[in-house]
Length: 238
Image (cartoon, rainbow, N blue to C red; front, side):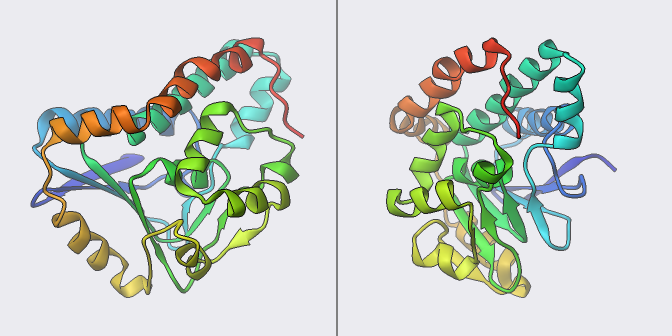
């Protein structure tokens, strides 16, 4: 069994994250990029749905158990490569030629919540799971590209609260503040997500072009503005 797998359901590519808490480390990021390559090159899918096999977690973000020892032993090259690859995953999701939908079947924390912001639409289970950006408590400042993703998906009045307080939002709160499209019982989450996804039978070319124009500033931040912070090798954690 791979870390990430996909299956086709009519015009929808369903990507399932199967790496436990789906924390970001090089193996996980490489697996997602590989799956995206396969879906884009070997299928005619018009919509991409991403969900998790974990019973209560969509993604808990950066794998600090992997990253912190890398930084402490001074392997700055590996740390830089990791952050560049993380940005690639964010960008591949953001400007995918397919319309992207996150079926958040559990917690989305830190980098996992940021990743959800890169999707075009988000559905979230209503009975369990929080959306949370705890970086202020972890001592991790957001890079410009991350801030761009957050501003895209979260109203500024709520983003300030999430960024400075590090508090948790339920699915119902996320729906009320238009962070997600809909909060669903877990029993109907995938059915409702897929019904929506199948209605989005849009041509890849126009979808890609709209995204590139709409998200030009975020792409620039991920590609250019983040670079000085990553290249400095001064990774502030804690």
